[in-house]
Length: 287
Length: 287
DNA sequence: CGTAAGATTGAATTAAATCAACTACAGTGG
DNA sequence: CCACTGTAGTTGATTTAATTCAATCTTACG
Image (cartoon, rainbow over all chains, first blue to last red; front, side, top):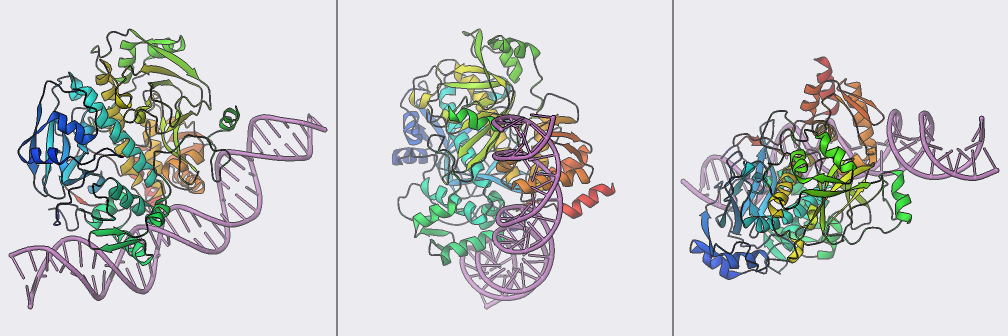
């Protein structure tokens, strides 16, 4: 593809992770089997995503599916947003081209994740996703003609769920990106990948190159390399190629400690390092 | 990152289409006037947000409004997500408490932004927003009882727009956060704040402290201070307290370079934003 | 095998964090 | 009214971490 060391496709066995969010996708082979056959039952897709059975799309019994090959770009920047895609299998890298022409990875997508959400507001996709490996997508047609390709009819409730989930993930990522240290970012990334994966085991395979991780985390390739080596030397994670095995989960959590969204209620008082946004805050908290 | 208003993106003055609605808060005094009276016409709110006139919520002629004082926290982490709020006036900081107890700003919200979106998927807000100054919010009730407080009835299409916009902003912010250099992040932040503001003039006032900016951008307070001073010395921006005046917009864009663009495919690889503080500043002064 | 892209490691350089001092300012209370 | 207090902000010196440049190693694949 472009210059050497890009994110584009790569080898590696199909890591058929099931990702998406928090604790939903309990893995639904049925969905995957169906998808291979070219379509998936709406109800099964809902279950796959952890959405309620409610017939948010009850007039449509099935969604069409399509296969994608490694390196394929099912969603392109600027294209009209006519469909959303739910990843059934495989994984993709979401990327933009910055003003200086460089490529920037702004996210990865796995089973349970949705492609095309950034086109809803304007009617045109704002980014593009390239397949890191072969996979399958369920096609969610956006029937609406409204401004910006807004979804019409009964679909919106369903789409709202997909969007709402993505919002949380993006915010959490944002918090991680604010972490200064590369090791923290990498730790959070690995934990995220592992925890959102289908496998319960401590071992998993990353479908993307070090360069893609580096671009996403905003550090240099070399730093990713070194950070991986550091994790290995510390006995926290075993790294062999793209296969990672978590040895000391606690330590990894501590390494990544910094962000992670689902945080409890607000308000522990006077904790260390807590910053004050303005003087009024304390006043109101006292009440 | 922010959620609502964040650094996000939309740099490049022209790209339309991408990066949030190009020219949105066209400022609708009518909406603001109404809000002060405790309610706002649905149609006016739509116009305020740049949404189509379509009666997405046609059975509700008005939305209730509420005032908030500085320091108030209208949306709290963990609280059930029963409402969304559209900011009519004022500004807020969105924050989470990290695992180590420290506070992290993940975004700022201003007129036209929405509060509470991160509660849609789970039914509970995942963050909280504290008012940086007095303001007014329009209250969007989520009637739905479905899992996770999903919006029901006719509302979803409207909510989809709010979500879709937020997704774009968050992704753009993510790209900025991947820029390694503090000056780049600050530049993008200032440009975003300026371009999303109602005023056309080159001057604007930031309602948040340096610490809040630092927390959001993931750098230290001192670095923010120094970066502000550097921008001033370079003649790019005049800084006096919280009032910023853009002197050389081009230079500021160049400083912030690293944007989201609806541009074609492929380019070079990006790892970490470049931009040398001293050399670049000198260079810019030369022009 | 040989090549080439990706990944790793090393050394030098540079940016940012950290530590620390100091200024500015608002609010408090004597 | 003015000193006293605490917070925000700035600036300087030092340390730490990551980038950058460069060389080497590894692996996939023709």
